[in-house]
Amino acid sequence: MEGHVGQLVLCRCSQAEQLAVRTSSRGSLATAVSAMEELRLAPSCLSEPTHKLCHLLQQLPLRRLSLRGMERLSVKALAELLRAAPRCQECDVRFALPLHWPTFGPWLEGLRASPNGRLQVVHSLHAEPSPSLTAYEVMTAQAYSLHCGRIEGCFRFASPGNQMVTGPIARFARMFDPPSRYSIMVGCERFEIEDEHVSTDPRVKTFRVTFWQGDKSPLTSPHSQQSFMWQLSMQPQSAPSEFVDCWMTDAVVPLDLECIWDGSLLDD
Image (cartoon, rainbow, N blue to C red; front, side):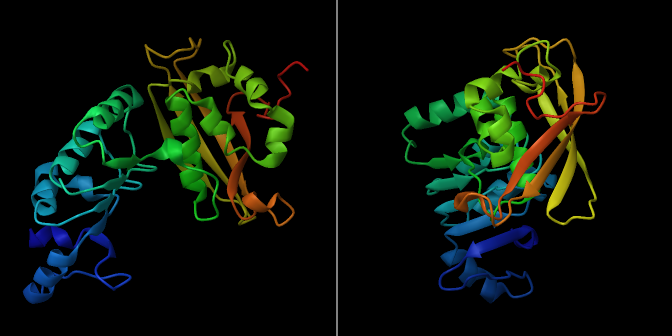
């Protein structure tokens, strides 16, 4: 157990705002473990076998577990971790990937109908624009919403200027109709957010994102793979108050086309 504690980020332990748990002090470790009701796992924790993490979680009286931004989180691994923490009442898996929706969606439905229905699972579809979100998290929330077939979740993070051109939501959704290159995003089998392109403006960030078409996607795309450049900006003080200092998307560019996600391909 002790060898894995160092991988964990403790969000709250008794009155402390943060506590670094070190295996060198067995007395301090025992005290911390007995009081640990809220825990955040580091994103790379699943590089260890799941059963080792489960053994650790079984020792803790957890009420809240954060797997936010967890890498390589499958639905199977999530279920195993939660079974190891039966007292857990809230689990945050926002921005954790891949959590494939064709499996994750039914699992959530089953959870609500189970005796453990009191457990609240907060996931990326619940994300809203907030100054606390990074550009990468916003990008993840949008791409994951499209993977889930939830176009409205993507539209939620379009910047006010973008929404003025592409909205309302019904018009925005038409951009994903085949044979549009954007159609590959909706219900995609998977996506990958690649390197961030450095900008001279710290309030602008651009990512390369690749989508792969799935056999069961609700829309049929003529392409099996497509990459895009995704540009986000931190909203200025002149933006609506609820969006000031929030990262939001201004444009999405298919890498092999000289067009941008600005509504120019839509009819009035």
